[in-house]
Image: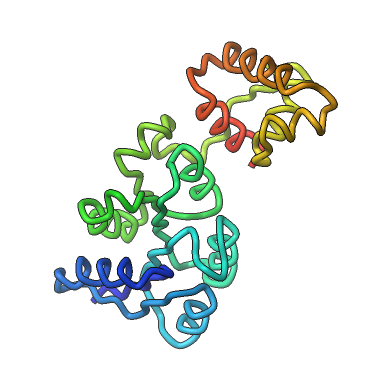
Length: 209
């Protein structure tokens, strides 16, 4: 029997996940937690094969949650559920140690497939994620050396993009105008042959995470 843990601060989401999982005879939800601390307390007494984790718990938000759980339970694979756009968070979730990433909009159709894939020791990347993660399952490969393509100033901007700074914040920190920051972004996109700022953001996360 596959033992699963669910951590989501919305009761309706937890109930829906339990219903989907409960329809499979070889799977069981052993932990259904509504908060990070509730999850950690439950894991002290109950062993599970996989954790389904909401990226935005009420008492612990963001990618730090993944890192802390993996630090405490390094052998427990994590499937991240999120309402956040894949191009912003998917790659960073994988870099933090997650084995899978699902947008909540497609959970019902992909959940079981994701669980089974991860339990085989493979990363699960949904179709929507593949559209914004062109590296596919090669996420462990080193990102290409863009240091040779970009100027020192452009790399400074890229570093700040990776730190989730807005164009206005980047401009203030570098002592330039927001228009100049936009120019740097456009130049970087041209040099790296990117088509959107979301792709530039993804490159920033890859290169500096």
